[in-house]
Image 1: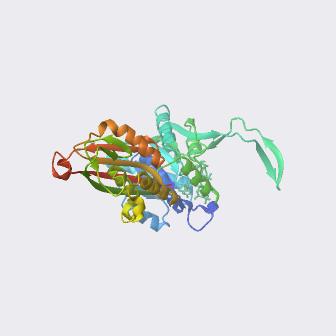
Image 2: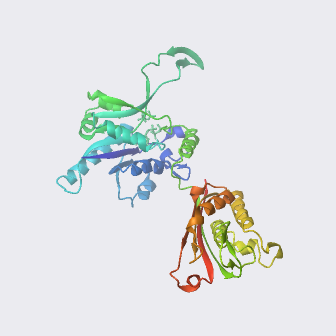
Image 3: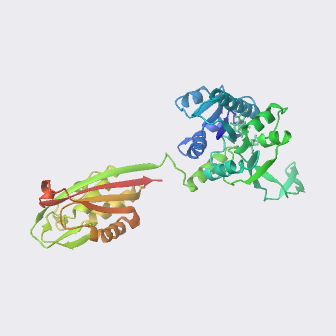
Length: 395
Ligand SMILES: Nc1ccn([C@@H]2O[C@H](COP(=O)(O)OP(=O)(O)OP(=O)(O)O)[C@@H](O)[C@H]2O)c(=O)n1
Ligand SMILES: C[C@](O)(CO)[C@H](O)COP(=O)(O)O
């Protein structure tokens, strides 16, 4: 037995203004409907029946390649759209009868496309409640005082005890809600009303204040704020990746500086600066993510002021540039390639030094090492190479 979703998206959204029905309008980088669908997809629900208006030709085309969706036409009223979706589910069950691969659909969650802030937790709690009854729906108890009014004046106060604001998804045993809709005369506010008219008991599940229905123009900004604070996956996030690579040769000396940590060694790395090959690779990875050239462009080796400079200056510059351009450094990963010195014992200190310079938590800094099996210049201990990746995010 399986649970399906039925998302009604055939309305005209007249109260939301603008020419385009609200479910097709942009919300934080994608359409309202795409947020709604994502919540159900992320919950692993399949199949999803999507009810569209025959007028919205472009919308039908935009879902043509989505094999997880069953598209069906809606009607002039919400209840007709729901009924058409339920019939599509019934037909799916009939078509799949006897198939060993597809379980029959026994439950359905009916949801408004116009509620894009629906959480996976709420979806899960409705599904769970359906294990114990024929119907369950989310609602939020009314907490504000309720008035009656006329002509801009308060005319009375309404008792709010026992009053709830209804939300979706409203969940039902499929056969029961199909039968309830078939026998309903129409004009119901929602599917709970249809179910109750057929004698079904409906359990109230704690709804979420953020599960708003976009109804009026100002609701778009409210939904955007909710999606932002809930930190939902957002394809409008600007994510940049960069890589860096550097090599320094060994010369005379008694220590090397790697990722900001001085390690005693029988030779030193040679370079114009302090030759911190690890820090240079990470610096270049950040410049790369920003498409801002490389370390040599910002700190030319021909410029004497950088002779013997601490590489920390370069890394701080790259990190500051990232912040100036509006990016957060999400994480960096650096690999040092050498036979000696052994990096492992120093890696924790390297991580904390690098994290401090980058202004991020040490858990976001990875320093690791590998030998090259005595092959090549690193294998012959002629020098040390380093590779790095940086991920930058602009919220
Ligand atoms: N004939 C209809 C009417 C509504 N809906 C859907 O039902 C949900 C909730 O309805 P509502 O907020 O009333 O949407 P609209 O009818 O589009 O809005 P309005 O009443 O402002 O025109 C929406 O996702 C809407 O697309 C539908 O599929 N078919
Ligand atoms: C189904 C519903 O979302 C429950 O709150 C609502 O009844 C449908 O929208 P409308 O604004 O009442 O038309």
